[in-house]
Structure formats: structure tokens, C-alpha cells
Image 1 (cartoon, rainbow, N blue to C red):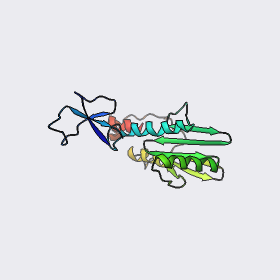
Image 2 (cartoon, rainbow, N blue to C red; image 1 turned 90 degrees about the horizontal axis):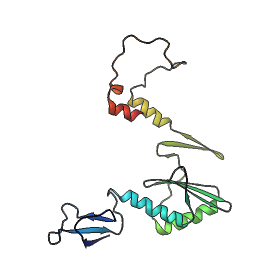
Image 3 (tube, rainbow, N blue to C red; image 1 turned 60 degrees about the vertical axis):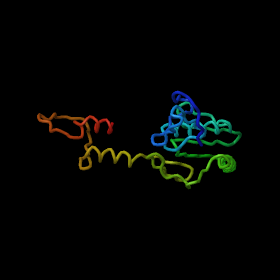
Image 4 (tube, one colour; image 1 turned 120 degrees about the vertical axis):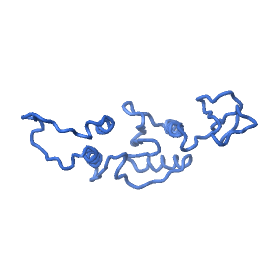
Length: 184
């Protein structure tokens, strides 16, 4: 939803300039006041995060001290952990009743859908065995090895050099600074 207001320039307080191709020639100094974040705009993900986390805090969640995208709810016997990355959300809990209540509250305010048990999240594979979870980034590590063209390399028992080569061959991956930074 947009409302038009007359200002000389857009400020960072929820205002944006008129989009190119949609300028109002009769009111060229008007700007748009964003009542609701528009998906795809630069600040949309920040607005979504602020709106969503503010609602979670009002429900009793607290931000983790080590990671602001992790919110924790501890009530009596229930613990709920909610991890947010842009518009991806991972929720884990230890009490079924508490999560049902939370999901009902979230569905009142936000359009959400349950995608079943998580098998991966942000490149991390999640394997569930009984009461335990195993997290792995094997595919991520493999993709780095592929990018570095190290798939056909042989493993060694001692990774340190005992004999230094006298002639070093140029390595196109390592000699390209941008590719090298992507790998590290």
C-alpha cells in the first residue's frame, strides 16, 4: 500500500522516491510513504525481519546473545528455538503443545506454511536419528572443492610438504583474486 506525500526528497524513514516510469508529472516532488514493505525492494527483507521479530518478541521470545537471527522462547516446560534467514524460518521445540499454540498465533498474523521436517537449511544437511540430530555441510565443502578444481586430487596422510618443489605451476583458480576469495 502506498500513500503519496509531498516532500523535497525521500528520507530513510519509510519513504521512497517515485519509481521510474511511474512519476507523477503534476507532483514531481511527491514521494511515496511505504505503509507496507514491497517485496523486492532493497529494504523489504529488513522490514520483514523487523516486523516478524517484533511480533515474536511480543510473544515472549528473546534474541540470542550470540546470534540475533536466533530467537528463543522459554516458558515453563517448553523451549522453542526459531532461526530466521531473510524469509526462511527453522523452528525446533521440545513440547508439541507449545509449538501448536505458537503456530496458531503466527498464522493469525502471517501467511505461513509448514514444509514438513527439515532435511536441509541454508546449505546445512540435517539428519535426525532418534533424539539426536547430525548437522553436516558435506555438499557445501564438495562445491568448494569443485570450484577449486581439486576433485581429482589425491589425499595424503601428512598434509605438510616434506620436499618443496623447485618449479611451481600456475594455478588459474588461486591466481584469480576474486575466485580465491570465494573459496576462503
